[in-house]
Image (cartoon, rainbow, N blue to C red):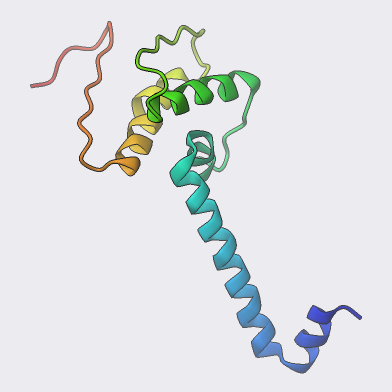
Length: 115
């Protein structure tokens, strides 16, 4: 008999508390990873996200921007490949999490300026 089963039988309240603490620790670890790595951040906020090879490459480049290793980045991808979701929504949120005082500006070739 494994130790957890024994604990569950003899001390059900303690087993329940241990399970809750373990789940909370897992959640905290996921949060910690999401604060440091852009792709982990995406997976944390978007549980139904289906990761592809192009997402890993794109996220790696955005991570380099976040770390200051890449100063300029142009993304050219076919429509419906998550470029807008990453660049316009998720990446700015990730960057604001890294530095809440950061000032961001976004521009596109089809949208007008908001004043």
